[in-house]
Image (cartoon, rainbow, N blue to C red; front, side, top):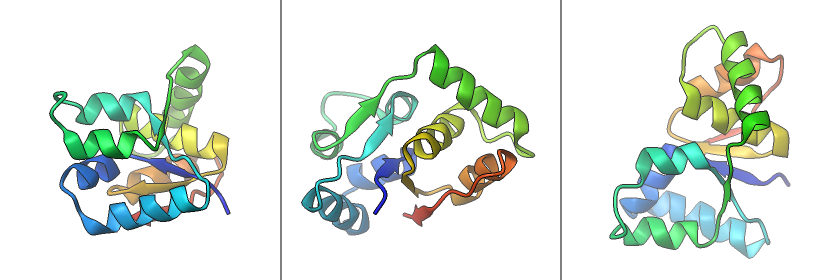
Length: 127
């Protein structure tokens, strides 16, 4: 089974204590999977140290850095995409494609479009 990459919608769902994301996260951890969170996603949702539910989710995740190589790969995905989903979604798609992950997302259309532009398929779990 593949790993997981969380987008901003997944982190927002965790902060709002939506049961679906917590069930997904609990199953991932139980099978030894540590979900990835691209650094740009964290930037998009982090507002203060008082986001207790977000901090609890992140404790079980790996925050993927955005270095030059990954930024270029995400930019290349944007360049091949018919839409303009933005840099954060491109970094999510890049992370998931590189790792062979399924994306937990509130924006499946943008992520699939990014993968399609590269001639790849991306599995998603809607949140």
